[in-house]
Length: 251
Image (cartoon, rainbow, N blue to C red; front, side, top):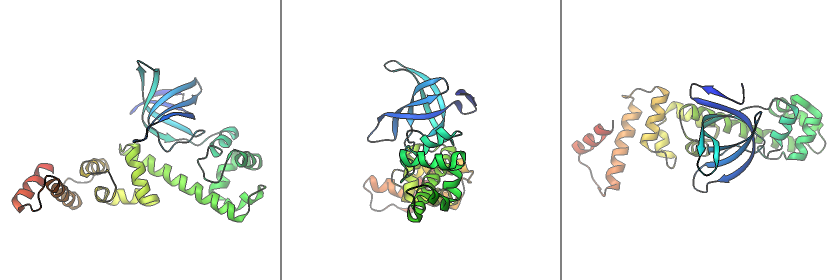
C-alpha cells in the first residue's frame, strides 16, 4: 500500500509515529507527527494508545487547517507490524512494551534480527540468549508483550464497530483481554459497567454486531435506561404505564 490511498472508509495513510506534539488532558485527542515515505506529516485524532516508533495505518481524510496547514484527520487506526530490522528496533525501543528500552531493543535485534518479534511473542525462553536477560526478566517481558498485544487486538475490534478510541480504552481498562468476549456476548453490559458508555452507545455497538432489536438484553437495558433518566429528573417512583411509554419511545 502506498503512503496515502483511498479506501472504502476514507483515505489511508501509513507510516511510523515520530512524536506527539499535543495531547488533550480530558479526551484521547492528539496531534502527532508521522514519518511516511512521502516525508513527515501532521496527523490529528483520537490516537491514544500509540507510542512513538510504532508503525500504524490511519484511516481518515486530509484537511486544510487555517492555522496549522495541511494535516491528516484520522477517524481510526490499525497497528502495523514493522517489516525491517530497523523498524523492529525502533518499535520495541519506543516504550510500547514495559521492560524494553532502546538499549535492550538494540541487543534483541542484534541477536535475533527479523525474527525478534516472533521470539518475543512465541519463544520467550530464548530471550535469555541476550546479555542482561534472565528467566524472570524474560517472563516479565513476555507478559508485557502479551498485554500490549491484547490492547491492540481489542482496539482494532472495537474500532471496526465504530467505537472511538476513548471509549475503547475505557472498555479495555474495565475488562482487559476479556473485552472482545464481553462485547460480543452482551454489549449492553457496557452501559452498566463502563463509565461514560450509556445505552445509546451500547445500542449502536449492538446494531453493528447485528443483534436483533427485540433481543431481551436490549429490552432490559432500555428499561434500565428509562428508569435512570427518570431518576435524574427527580423521580423516585415511576408507574408501570409511564415506564413502558418512556422505554417504548427509546426502543
